[in-house]
Length: 414
View 1 (cartoon, rainbow, N blue to C red):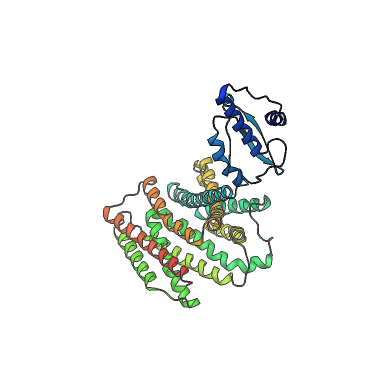
View 2: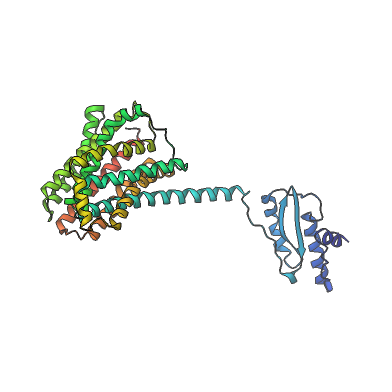
């Protein structure tokens, strides 16, 4: 009678008549199981997934009898149905999102995925931007570097403004007074971009990569002189390693260019000037990360346009266009380089927020490896064994510098 009531409550299905003593035993065990899980319409005696899971052993022990299938909790009541071995039913205790452990695992998985993607995006944008600018500066025979930067910064300005309109990023509206205060920083920013772009015309990507690290030496010296920051022995040792490796690599550079190294030296000084003045300016000027990106790119446009016109580059571009050098590939790659520059800022912010400042710095240090290797392979750079050893030595000095900075941050140093 109890079985009949249970089957009526679960859809009116009738039990299969068992035969013999074994069948009677299966019928009674099925009735007990159905009564225990309160599938006859009454309230569930166990209102949590954990309590139901404790009963899975009972279900397994009565595997020869009718089983409860699809048991779930709805509004505090257990619902489900009965079946027989002939229907191959089973007791299903699948975890749902209400399970705390499952939610924690899901959140952990999302965090790891976000951190991994942010690091990959940061490395990819940084590498692609360097390689694209190297190709534009050295492969194309168009001596109009300022105009190329003008196009790239125009694309970056449009891209960051579009991101603000779509809600991807946010920063304060344009303010003339704020732009005037930010102008000295922007002058250093333009000098940093321009000297780097011109140096790429003369030097190989591996040499540019290791000499860019020497800007850290000038920056640390400026911080010690202007801001009174101390320098640890580990930082000094890393600088000695970087400088020694860079100088020995330059001595063994088979494509040595004095003009190129002069431009690279100017880039190191302008980079340090930008970093130091930025640190000073941000004490009085409140701008978000993307506010800086917007003002830097926007304010650079009139400066670059003035320099390009004074340098006679419009006539150079017109002559190059008549020779067929300014094709669709040229404009597409230049637009991509500007887009990569804006995406690099997005990726850097995402990487820091998804991981930590330490991880971001580690990724930035390790990023020099693929840039060096790809620059060597794509542009057919001739490197001797000695030069390769000294380049590696200088890169190791950069890793030592990053490690020393991590150690100081963990100890509360600045």
